[in-house]
Length: 123
Image 1 (tube, rainbow, N blue to C red):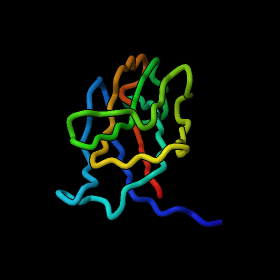
Image 2 (cartoon, rainbow, N blue to C red):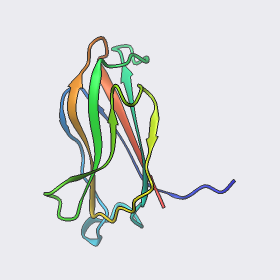
Image 3 (cartoon, one colour):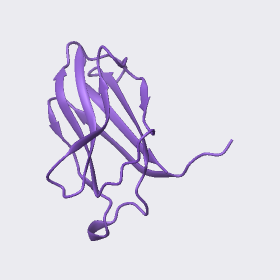
Image 4 (cartoon, helix red, strand yellow):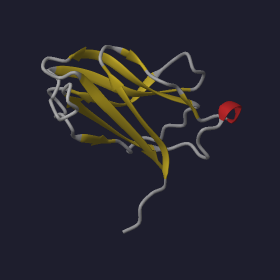
């Protein structure tokens, strides 16, 4: 089985809404050698001991931008549609972007202490 090279990988935890580190794909601050075209997104809730505990509700997006100011969702992971821990894959569209970030749009933790969001980009 052939595997596509991983071009982008990012993991952040959220305890509230907001955005995390912006990853630059352009020549002005290269962190990637090439721009990924297919993306995966996973959201997993954790309790204060670090073991699995699904959050009550979440809406998380992997977003892309050309200018670093205007953002568009590339992939979303939403409770009620996507279960805790499930990997959501995209790839039917090609996304040529200069910047990538994780955005926690809404979050209700419930019994969870935080959510761990993992994103992956491949060619």
